[in-house]
Length: 112
Length: 113
Image (cartoon, rainbow over all chains, first blue to last red):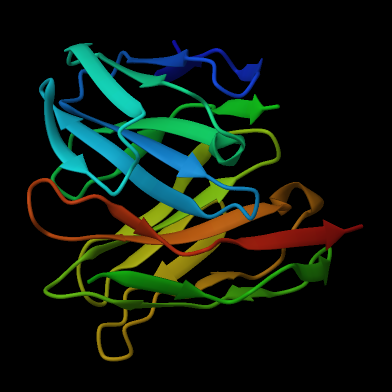
């Protein structure tokens, strides 16, 4: 009965590689998000999709490309990984106008 | 733009002590306000929320009141437990249809027996 799930939970890779993180929500929400949490726990929005359409794209390198095949899924593909991409990435979803968001468990990405 | 300022941590308390974590915000209009909690190794969970001025959000013994006059949403609990040890995030959401959450930097709470 997991609401927002992400895979993988841990991802360790070399610089320059390309990797993807998957996110799925079974809440029937229309809006999904990707956040990046750095080593100091600071959370920053990266992208937001509503009904498969990109609605928010913060200042994120274009090596990061989100893809939403349907409104229950929002995947994050990262090209040419860099050391600074090491972080925990959280997926979230929301439905209500007051924007209560439900978060996934996070994916810890380590770039060596 | 919107911003949220929280007190720096870590906050270290003994079990059964009173907790206050300060949060102030800057926003246009009438944002909704939230407290999220992140337990070690987990994602964020909504702790409580308030959607208009003077609303009080409460959950699991935690409370916060939306104070528009002081632009604050301080988190309080009368008697903390060791299991409350976590990172607490204050956040706001603008009142447009597709606004995102703006988070504070988080405050780590450590409760010792």
